[in-house]
Every structure is written in structure tokens, then in C-alpha cells.
Image 1 (cartoon, rainbow, N blue to C red):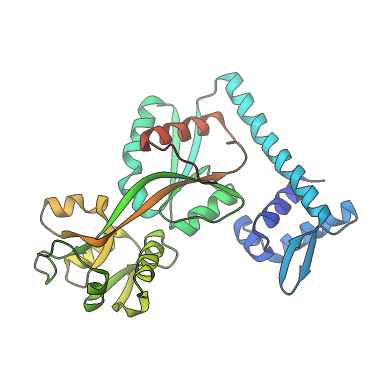
Image 2 (cartoon, rainbow, N blue to C red):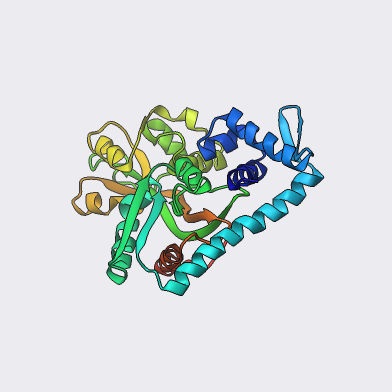
Amino acid sequence: MSDRRLQVFHTVAGVLSFTRAAEILNMTQPAVTHQIRQLEADFNTRLFDRANNRISLTDAGKKVLEYADRIIALYGEMDVAVKTLTGDTTGLVTLGASTTIAEYMLPGLLGDFQQQFPQVQMRLRVANTDAVVSMVADNSIDLGVVEGEVNSQLLLVEHCQFDELIVAVPPNHDLANKAEIKPTELLNHPFIFREDGSGTRTVIAAYLEEHMLHENQLNQPFELGSTEAIKGAVQAGMGISIVSKAAMSKETGLEMLKAIPLSPPLVRRFYFVRQRQPFRTHLMDELFQFARRYCGSDEADD
């Protein structure tokens, strides 16, 4: 039985979807189905029940998942144990982060870590929250730091830190002198959104729904793919937006933009996202523990 078949099974069992598993594993859906059928042939039994375009684990599938969890975890433990024994603190670690975090939170963290471990090579992949979660799930990266909530049975999700979102407006805007802005006031001005799949967009949409509003009610909304692009568009008078307060320090200091709190405040969490099995290298565990201390993280959300 190949490791690949077990890995494919483990992913399908985690998301209960052949289509979603194919996306996570960067495979075609027929290839995923083929791997599962081969595994079922090895065991001479069905591992999934398929009905009404939904799948569920059979009793045999549940038993295989129990062992798959242990086998995959043991592979990780073996790698970490060897690295620890040899004292290996060299190599490459790969992180993924959503755009706001990569631009405004991680530079300081990674700089401090590299001072402590100068021989380590670090690679950062920047994408929106959905893409980072997919990269963690298919082991393309070791650790993700994202700005949107994550729902996956495959992954461990841990709170990192809080981040306040504020309204960004030009200094000469009608709203610029307000002490705070209510959600309904957003509807009266052209609004600039992040792209679909962005954690920031998801949080804003949820905030509007909490106040009986919908993003479709926003005035002439259009999308841009980064916080920097949005700040530039706001500065140019193209509209207003909601962005991370941490992303506004330079512009507010130079009086290029005004940052106005929402009422009630909009505060979100940043999250660490990682595989359930132990890290593949001792070095990656060092970086994760360093990041937890750096962020003051002491809370886990499984």
C-alpha cells in the first residue's frame, strides 16, 4: 500500500468531498477517485458510502482513518526525532500568510527569528486566506497565518492575536471629522472591497450581516487585490474602505488618510493554521513556538 494512497484517503476523509480533496492535493478528481478505488480494492471493502452527491465513511473507512491518523503522525514524529537528535537547526522553512499579515505583522517576527537562527532559510508565500489554508492542507507550506476563520477537520487552528479594522477615508472626505462611523453610514459612499476569498472581505461581510446589512447594499462596490492598492485608491478619492488599523500607521502619520473607528468596533482574530500531525522538521517547530511567544498566543481552537 503506497503512502500516497493513504494520504489521499486521509484528505478525502477530512473534507468528505472528492472535489475539495482534489483541489487541496492539486490533483484531478478522477485521479483522487482512482487512488481511493485502489485502496478499497486492497482492503476488499468500501471505505466511503456515496449517495445523493454526498459521501460518508463506512465502518471500515472509520477504522482506516484511525490508523491513517496514527501512521501520518508517526512519520512526522520520526522526522522531528531525527532532526532533534542531530541538532539540525539548518534548512528551509516555508510559511504562508494572507496579505495584511505578510505586509504588516510578519516582517518583525521573521526578522527577530532570523537573528536567533541566522543559518535558516525562510520562504514566505503570500495569498488570500483560502489559498493559504489550501497550501497548509496539501503540505505546500509548513505553517499558515491568516486573517479569516478556518473550518477544517484536517487542520489545527490557533488564535494568534487581535486586529482592529477601521474605516479609511481621504482627509477632505465628508466622514473625515467623525469620531466614529456606524455601519449604515457606509452605504452612502462608494466602497472598495478586497477580492473574494480574502479574510478581510469575509470579516467585513459578517460584520454587515450582524447589523442587518448585506455587501450588495454597498454603494458602487469594486474590488482590489491588496491593502496597499486599496489605500492608494482611497487616497485618490475613488471611495472609502475598511482596512486593518495596523496597515494605516504610515498614512495617518503623514496625514494622507484618516482612520475612523467603526461603532460598534470591528475586531477580528489572526490565526495560526497547521497540520494535525507534528511538524515535519524540528526547525519548523522552533519557528512555531517562537511565533506563539512573539504574538503572545496562549489559546488553541481545535
